[in-house]
Length: 253
Image (cartoon, rainbow, N blue to C red):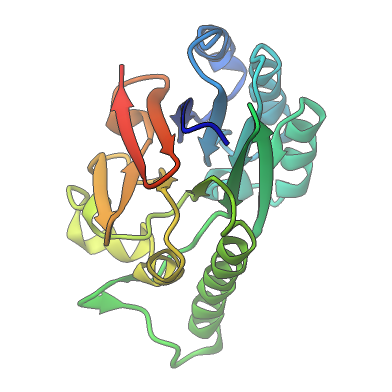
């Protein structure tokens, strides 16, 4: 690896694509030419999880000349056609991660990306327990599976030069803080933050909380809510400077 390598990553979440958004999406994705080395999409790519809506997003992704990696969000699961949605995006060259990871070799630098939807459960002071009716325990078990997948993925990409976690739901309360307190339990889970603290990546990206805050931290790891409603932009561009010793993430225009 070079002494210092700088990558530009374009990130967005909650674009809620459909045919009525085609022009906007094609303009925003097409405008990335020369601005990014990698595109990351943190879920809610469609409006209601219909394959036809995913096709609009796929067409926009075809305009991008760099790798695109995505996770799905709750909207993408809504119609029960998440596999079809992922397949449509995959046909456009998008790598869709669900409880999985990938390593990209860009400019002789390994970029490990661990991606999954995440799930609900809440944050300290208001969390769902593994107790009670079977349906509630299933919710807890779903978050456990997401948490375990994050841990496994982070172990697998531990030797990568740059390590990224891509989620839809929030792993910390800090980036959902401006949402109504009564719905925090449904915006993410602090349990997702446990493997992030144990196997620290360089940056975590998520969406889902439209009224949340842009930036938080898990220890020394920066966490960003890149929902377009929060950033106010089609994409937020991050400069990630990878040095032989230490890494820093800096957001730029």
